[in-house]
Length: 249
Image 1 (cartoon, rainbow, N blue to C red):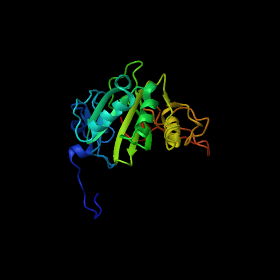
Image 2 (spheres, helix red, strand yellow; image 1 turned 135 degrees about the vertical axis):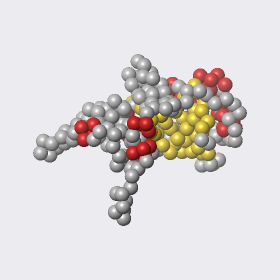
Image 3 (cartoon, rainbow, N blue to C red; image 1 turned 30 degrees about the vertical axis):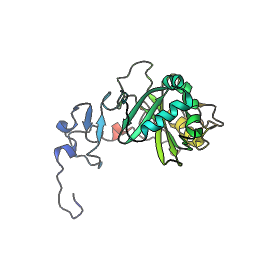
Image 4 (spheres, rainbow, N blue to C red; image 1 turned 120 degrees about the horizontal axis):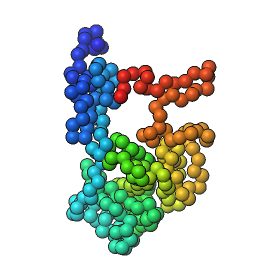
């Protein structure tokens, strides 16, 4: 119904019918794959990515364009060509942003150079967050695939630039060096990423949960974490999983 009482009939794609939610080119449209009824969630335009459909695994070829080449050359000069080649697994330029995919054992070396070198001066780590590519855009799931990613956004206030560093690890060995010794602002960001994704930041001064209770079992933002069904503390009630409350698939 519309706000003035008139009936509004959504289009088939907005409503989430079968023809709209069928996978096409690695993408699925509609709210969480719901079909057979109107989409009342307000997310009729949501695009759900099939495994392997979204993450670009290629490396952008040089020249990257703009100041991206200047920063890359300065980083190579700061750490040396051999260290850069070993540390940076690939570089992706997309939507006006540059991402360096970094091997975890070289993360601190690159972070130190990015902060301290006169030609770089990325003084601020504005964000550390996690991503789980279990089945929503990463390559097909195989044992030992590095599905957990740590994403760091670095800002140069001197040159008014932003870059992204990304480190990928496996769920079986989710260890990444803490950058808090270089960027103190990363302290609670790393704690939240640990709390939600179970990524262990080695060398962090106090890696404890920040949102969930200390004895909580599991990491809520991992893609294999159960939805709902969590016991609550009053009247012995439970929160049922979403798939028992609505026709989600």
